[in-house]
Length: 136
Image (tube, rainbow, N blue to C red; front, side, top):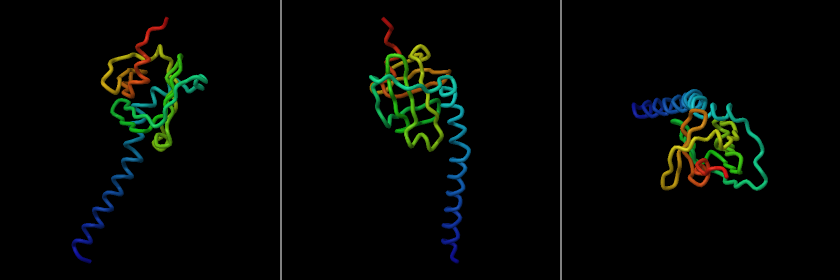
């Protein structure tokens, strides 16, 4: 075997081991620290029939970036967060957060930031700005 082949095989093995470590240990740890507190504090319930639903939305929870991993339903009582198929791969759990438990922080051009169960959650402005609308 030439040196180039040995180096290529070694680099390939390194990449495989690194990928296994990331998927087996790092991502579950990030999910446990950044998403699970929200899901544990707010178990899922069915959205109202008139809820606005959008699939494949992008959120970040703490340091965890969840691009296209969350399906969202918004009704007058709750923010419903369901993992899309991509989110289920990393073991996200569903949550239905009452609006009273959502602390609005700020909004940007396309996104907004809220705090739920002590976790900073960033996501689409269309759904998270509902947290700042006062009840009548």
